[in-house]
Length: 234
Image (cartoon, rainbow, N blue to C red; front, side, top):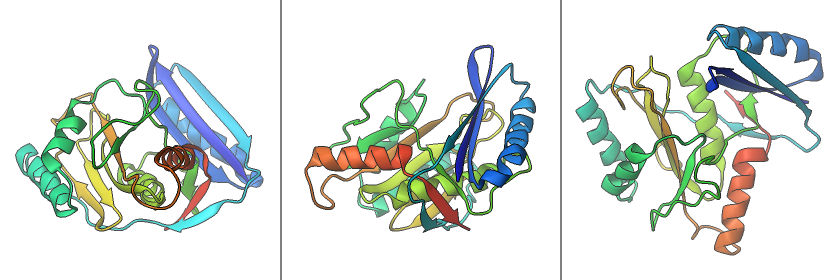
């Protein structure tokens, strides 16, 4: 099996990215579809990386849940707070941290109890990678909601992750979600203002779950999110 990743830039700025986990026989077809996706954004620089996966690939189910029905920014943020409170967390402080994030290239990982940021590199963040659907998309088009559910599926399958909050940085898209082990996936329609070039992802980590030291569990969590290959059954 191959892990094929694409990253595209324009004027030195990241504008598109995607990855696939596929059989060797689909390599050329996947590369062409990822190039098509990057070119649709008028990319000036496109990087394609292909790696052979030597370890066993874990299969997990796709997370499920409703799309958003909120009709305003205020309603969306109230809904987000209520979801976090229903999970037993400090919704107000978590959202304060979430909406204050800026210029982070990846996700931030936060201790759900202390609200301390835990990622080793505060500028880079955590890159959730090495995952795909068992039915890879070869169209070259972006399906925001499908891809969000796939990513959330990997994040929430991590033993010490209890929830995730996300909104895309796509200026044409205001959609986000909260995913959790307890409630599954809940879409939020109006997380941010239209045309706002801002996005964020917060992964809530609970170091009290499972065996081992806090540091070991955090290290295993980051390793899982960034490197463990996952295929998701839709």
